[in-house]
Length: 437
Image (cartoon, rainbow, N blue to C red; front, side):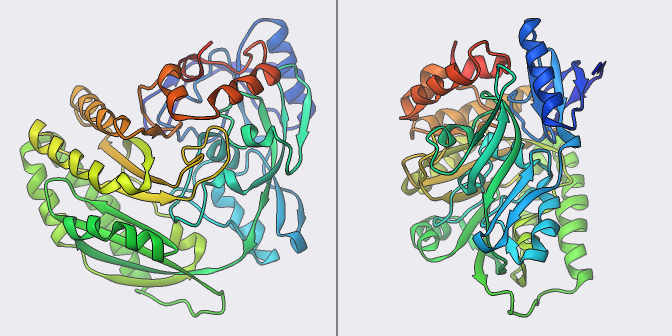
């Protein structure tokens, strides 16, 4: 195979590269490309949808695009397990699972990523009884740094590394997921007040299947989202298709994008814009399939940083962030998103060993870069003060020295990496920073 040089940039426009691009469609082709890269001293990096804001997917020499490896590989409906090719996008999965009456147990709010990219970076949804997407993995096949194919089954100790491997261990070829019977969600969206929402945080996450909220900086306004799991026999209800188009496309995307552009040009107007947006919120209830409720269309381009902290420390941390924004006089047009997830046992999961709360901060992609960087740095200082773990696919400045202090299995993961990729064929600058060596 002979690739061509192409310009690449990620969705958030935070990273670019000009790699040699290869698009393999078989495991043997991947093995040959990896073996050749190792023999010639080059680095090779698989990429999915490029939806990470961090440099985790940036290629140094060769970029592997896995669009040729998509779809259902095999299924065991009785065991609620499916094996998917690694390049399958999350938005393609519902149609593959529907004939079997299955669904993924939990999802985030974006489905543009590939299943391998989402799991390798630690993508998660919300719900204190549910882990991130990587916790649904019960098997995988990958090509390691020697160009050898490795298959891992459930209970293989290395799966705790491979299921959330940062792209540092090999090229994932397929992933086996433990699914659940298809279900509906009753989604209740309602306005709330900042102090009331924070005071009710512990009760909400403890009693609601999937709970999250958004706070509009410079205001007292929050939007709470309460999702309750229901059987598929529950009738679908909610606003008309026109109303949902108005709410989700015209207001949440087109109008919001226009307001972000205004805020960039006139930063002093941002607090008034957020007040208007927050007070315009109204309650609505929707019952629909889980995937249609979990997923939101994100058309306004942004940049994002997210940290996981002990779940009980969310209210204190958010109050600190609010005070910092006021003190530093930032003008932040994007709401701050707050979620929760169950503890798990994966080596580099942001929820490893502890139930975690997530605080995600965003800036419009055209905002002043220096101001955005300063804002992210100030939020990061607060969240690292709470033992925060950065989302691997989102912007942060942490390095191996810090990450070792917040990940109890950090060196265990590094030892797995030494076995799977001793020559660092899959390395790049980001992995050198966060893993050392």
